[in-house]
Image 1 (tube, rainbow, N blue to C red):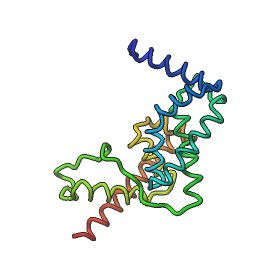
Image 2: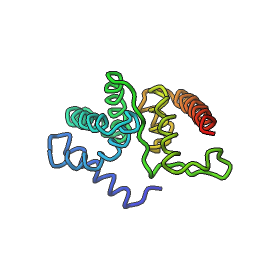
Image 3: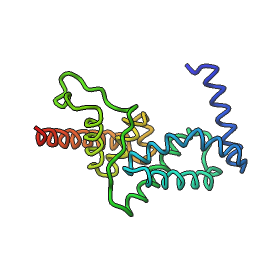
Amino acid sequence: MVSAKDQGESREWAILLERAATGDVSAFEQVMLRSERSVMLTARRLLGNVADAEEASQEVFLRVYKYLHRFDRTKAFEPWLYRLTVNVCNDIASGRSRGEVAWSDEHEPAASSGDPHHSLTGDEHRKLIQNALGELPEKQRAAVVLRELQGLTTAEVADVLKVTEATVRSHLSAARLRMKRFIEKRFRRSL
């Protein structure tokens, strides 16, 4: 059930998007301020470095500004924004070699006592995950970043990537397997 507060915030957001779509620069700045963190985090994770992520973020918001009037405001804004972000990152990545994928402290997986690399420090663990994520093909990496790190549902990821939910599940399964093998291989080397 949606609370009155959530309905009010949702209505406020819809009004803000409507004003931004009609050219209200102040409203667009508010949309950008509310969205820039998720765009930047997603871009960093997909591209692997801050410089490319900043370039991507700028391009994403240029496209938002240019195409917001075409956005169907009966649908959720976030999937549309993520789709733009993934598309821009794919454009940038196709022109450059893949780098290390960025991982934020707030999304660090908790190590369990049964984890074979439990003895790794937080920084070592993040680095290992970054490298594993960086080895994934673009579609698998995008699915993992959107689903596991950005918290979108499988249906939302499917909408963003313009694939079926079954394809998303397939990408996630293959990505998890590749990451697991990569981590196990790296961990064995360090013993």
